Amino acid sequence: MPIHAVPYPWQAVMKCDHGYTSSSPPLIHLREVLCELDAADRRCFLRFVTGSPRLPPGGLAALSPRLTIVRKHPSTPTQAPSLASSPTAAAESAAAATAADHDLPSVMTCANYLKLPPYSCKAVLKERLLYAIREGSASFDLS
Image 1 (cartoon, one colour):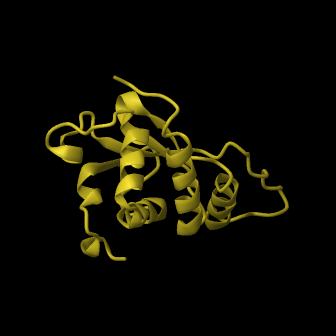
Image 2 (cartoon, rainbow, N blue to C red; image 1 turned 60 degrees about the horizontal axis):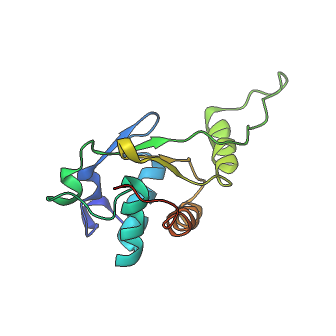
């Protein structure tokens, strides 16, 4: 889905940092997945990211600090390349994405940071994000 066709302007309220830009494939997939969520899952996502059951007056655009998406490095290290082979950056990136497919996204609620692994595809991102926001939704509350 093109960015201009998304029903909510996620790109306008998200800041990308630490390895991601607004055109990074995981960020494009994240925006698409967020637009596909129903109201209950959107609430779970917001609670997961902010630690709060409510947004400030003005909604996501009024979050302070701003919602920031950062790259989470895979917890499973990829195989180090041998000296005999010379893998390209694309091959290294693909290996990192495959390793990341086993990780869950995490957050720093005090900074409104979503630490998103570089998943290999949108389907994996959606499955891991939904698991994290649904299973973690009752873990703790900030007041």
